Image 1: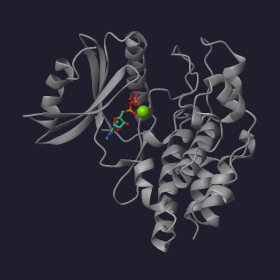
Image 2 (image 1 turned 45 degrees about the vertical axis):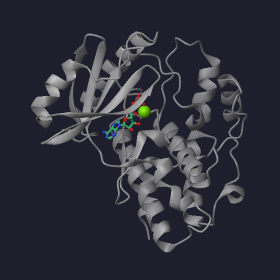
Image 3 (image 1 turned 90 degrees about the horizontal axis):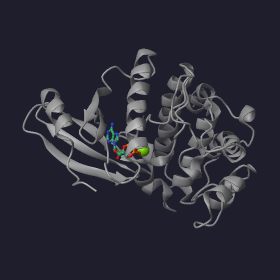
Image 4 (image 1 turned 90 degrees about the vertical axis):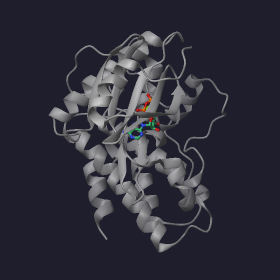
Length: 296
Ligand SMILES: Nc1ncnc2c1ncn2[C@@H]1O[C@H](COP(=O)(O)OP(=O)(O)O)[C@@H](O)[C@H]1O
Ligand SMILES: [Mg+2]
């Protein structure tokens, strides 16, 4: 393992974008890659780079190049704001990628108040509906362009202080192109849709499983239920092998929301239940769900 300092090649590039002097703060260090907040007098970015020397380096560098390609394609398709992608390139240890900084908190932390047993206030209800609506609107933009995010989960979703969601991490997204890519084999287990779980279990590790928009909708429902109730939506032992967890998920049953919710909130519960329909065709589209959540 190298030191957790950002690649010099990236800093040199970013100096011309956010200005000098730069400060770097390590945000995460996991699964073969690291992320930093890089800040200068003109702005801030999130910088990701693969971590050399941990055995995952090649795949992670390829994944980072793949995410850059996804950002370029999604921006060209109008599904991502121009300017979200700040830059990307090679460094001595692999690849780096920089995106515009979003001032927000991951969903688990942002939901702390809503999760508390005495959180049932009109303001919390409005806030929850706003988070769900802006989250599903982000997904709807991707889906309109023929993409699925394919890693919808609480840590890939930032909630700004005014309750607006920004979706991040496009590394595993599944697009309409069909060109060469790293085979998609699901992302976080807890937010993997039943049909994706089934496809993964039925195929070899080198086979690409194309996640569809309705798998994102399931992942959204699973994330909302998880962060609001404090319990993952599909019950299984923590230390069960991944294949066993996927086997349970593929059966389609989730914890009954009425039993695990911190307080009753029919409208929100209905939206979550609709997302978690076992059959993809029974789930609302992201656009339909956005419309539903907009209606007073
Ligand atoms: N645009 C962004 N704004 C703020 N923080 C970000 C941004 N992109 C990523 N991060 C932070 O960096 C972490 C890792 O980024 P992510 O793209 O999810 O990569 P990975 O999951 O592959 O490590 C995120 O969990 C988040 O805390
Ligand atoms: Mg991530």
